[in-house]
Length: 336
Image (cartoon, rainbow, N blue to C red):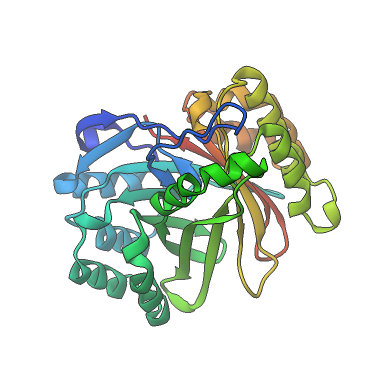
């Protein structure tokens, strides 16, 4: 069962729609502040007071495969915290569907250092990760917490987002880009700290780099290079299908492209932000059906996972090679 968070579970004061306009240089450079998560922006922000977090946590635990320990980690993260946005995702790989995956966004100013220290200690964040996190937090405009439960166990994630810094760099160099006809180089967008709280020595840091101002055609040339020996895989074929379909249905929609990697393992992936196209997950059903078949996932299992999310707005997709060297594809969608 997917994690579906309904309005009745949280106090939603208002929705705020922000833009993510990375336009092609031919149209003109236009960048404005956006709430971005791992290369995605929540199209609608839900400002939630978690005074009723017990109800939310209870709902999540009832409707997912979350274990008691997972519930405890969730309480440690959400207790007395105001969440600005949240998102659900579904991760696909050969023979597998993972649905217990979500992400919450928090404004750094809303958390004191003491509060963050308390959270990190209670969810067993490695000390060296805590030190690195606090060394970089002054440059961040957003903090995010994630939860995932896969074959290895519970995985906790903490992210720093540097969107404002990326925007400032690109805007400051706009004249040079126009004069030379070049595009900005890779810009660090997010730094993700990931670990198993029950075994903190199993941990990784993922760096996400934005390549601003790329057109869909330019992105389509970047994607194959992500894969070993440029060999086509199920996720590559699906991602190019998502890109092309989005470009055909919404040709003037800017798409944000990120590349991600980790040290010491084969992890290499990319992310396409498709929120601005405002398309439902169902729009891409034929591509997903083909992907499911290529991944040898039973159709009945897929239909059970697809039915609850088909009408949600697709946010972004990520694909590539995971840290074990296996092909994967993840679709992120907005919780209405």
